[in-house]
Image (cartoon, rainbow, N blue to C red; front, side):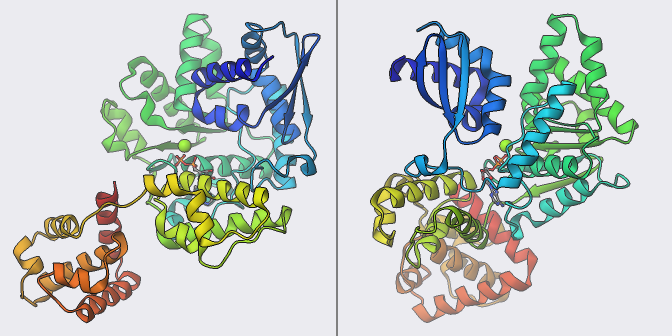
Length: 457
Ligand code: ADP
Ligand code: MG
């Protein structure tokens, strides 16, 4: 089979199983050869091989057979030494994989309707910072079990902020504490797919029974069922049945329950009946923490990795709030480092990541910042740049200066000029003031985050 043919097979798989699953399970596969109807693949771990075989085996065979007859798939695990030039998942710990294999066996014997859990998404690998500490604490609490306190737990937040990671972490943790519990994780899309399939095959009784017999139900990206009336209906019944039995439910969405359009009111209110927590966009500190953690993990396996001082800080500063993008950048650096075998300096990093940096380049202007901030605090644009010094005007002005310093590449004198010809020391004072208020005043901290999100979004 040619590379091209395998590429086409992969494309079909992508469109059928969706990006997430594709990224987790198909992307890591490397087609090694095809002989006598046996296709062999190199996989990073046994766990991946087993899952692919069980969940996507038939599908892969079917699509490959369009190009050449394939009767069997075989998976071999590549020893780490052979794949040093390839990029490995950074944080697969040996014991994660062991737990994962345990879970596979369990699912095999009981045919639970869930989706596979990513062995990388554990509490251990989740970096906690201000923007996600509440969500993390709630997730921990739910995983600890005990008398059900938050039911449902509803996590929401923008793309790539760790919702799925936290859900998998809860599932792993519950499963590790209590292997007898039936923990089911799946996306709302898969829930719908199962539901429609059950309808079509007249197996609604089985479907209902299956979903009502779980101990912990986790449904990811529930915004997906908005507007899908019969799926919503069924979801609502499943939900109620489980809550009535005191079973834990964990849900996620890209926005708050009340903001999901085309979702029935009674469902919205049920979703809000437990604990609703949001993951805020990452801040600089969290991004840096995540990068440092990932580098440390990577170094455990590849101790030769050398990254110059300031590179991680630069990335944390320049790359947007989405952690997935941040991880992608880091992976690229790792690959680059292993290829050139040299220290990654700031210039090399900028070179290697030019496209990513350009895409996330902030093109916010000082004027836009001033306008947004004036709007937010309900003051006039003319006051933003004018001479008034009372706090109700001066504070928003300082907030705008702080944002200008953070979000643009303008120098302090330059910023001062744009604030009605103020001196650079005034700007510096304002920036420092806000820096310290940010620590002590949660309202200011929230304002800053909100404004930043609005300006960068
Ligand atoms: P979401 O479901 O909110 O879109 P994901 O959970 O898929 O986001 O996270 C995207 C990527 O970022 C994942 O690889 C995840 O492991 C990583 N990630 C997000 N937040 C964190 C965090 N706080 N610590 C470590 N990794 C994180
Ligand atoms: Mg997700």
